[in-house]
Image (cartoon, one colour):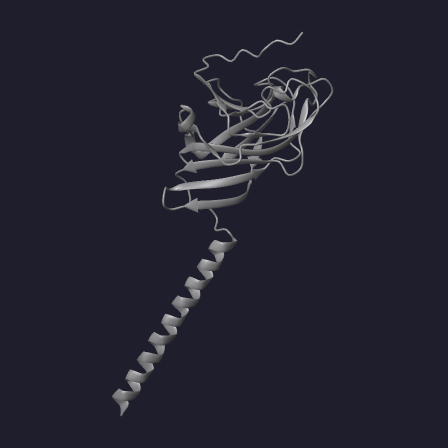
Amino acid sequence: MKHALIISACIGLASLASAQKGSGGATDVLEAANTSAGMPAGNLVAVSSTYDPAVGTTTEVYDIGGIESWDGLGDPDNTVFAASVGDSVVAIGWDFSLASVGASWLSESSISFQGDVFLTPGSGDDFPGTSSYSSGAPIVLADLGIPDIIVAGGILPIEFFEAFDDNPDAVDAIYLPGSELTLVYTGGAAGVPTVSQWGLVLLTILLLGGVVVMMVRGRRTTRAGWRE
């Protein structure tokens, strides 16, 4: 018999009607809570990073393909990563392909962000199998009435866990290759320039180089005039 995981001090639940689902037709769910998370066991490295100077936010995309979802929240078997972010996470996005193992349901695979916010992409898909889930774009937490995630020391623990553990001490689900997780945060260092931004940087360098050349030539011409 399956028992729902009781999460202490749950302070909110929000359904994302606009999110896309691969099957089942249920909406994705972000849930706010204050359960403490485990210590990070490794680093989650961004595959792309962009900075928006207009609003002062950095958007980072992480490749989570191959990450496994094992046991209940806080279990030592779980995969826990540390993401290096700024002062606070203000939005979360996802584009997952998830495959459950054995009798485990897709709706049981969850992700904890520092224990402050939980993401259950397959919410409502109470059956085993493989499916894809996407937020379409990063979801602003404030739009759902969920407080921003305040990050101590710029390190955000992210734990992959199961709401119900069908396979104790074994894998219940796997995030398939190509699965991505997106975080939008404030503070911290500006993001790494994208390809288009690198082009702008290169253009700026070339323009500055031209200015320097013109200045050097101008000085040489002036000196020649003085000698005459």
